[in-house]
Image (cartoon, rainbow, N blue to C red; front, side, top):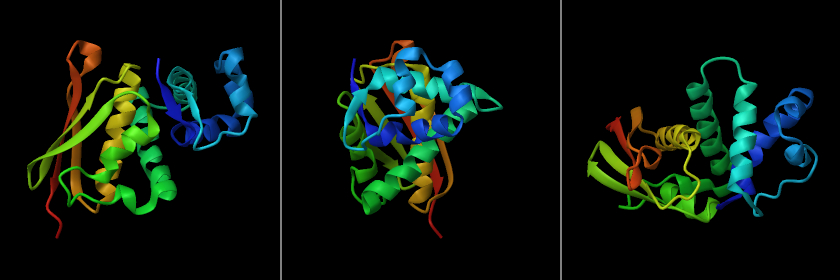
Length: 180
């Protein structure tokens, strides 16, 4: 299994810490340490742990599960802006820096961004070892928020192929309206 940078799991851990008693009830005992140990943004943590932390946090959020997962992805994009600043704001190049961040945060998988038209693009994730539908939903929210932070309006992001379903890669179609 792969590894994920602490910067990606930090928001989830902070959420669980704010609800420590409830978190202790949903987290497996071997992961209770995340509620007290320092999480270093530049350190590597098992992606499997991130998945369990994420699912535990989402179980504490009222409402529809898929929406909560996408909300976590959106929050992650906002946190990455705080850490990486202008790197996430750049859709003028064929490969936006926003999508290069994947390789900084995960040690498996390669994300690419291909403009389809002036108002749409394909985003592909290949060779990500930790396949799970929850990560797809989180990534959908991350991509949508990242595009919105690039001052695009009417952003829609939908996954059109998925490794979980047997595809050779995950593919999202992103559409937006032109800047005014």
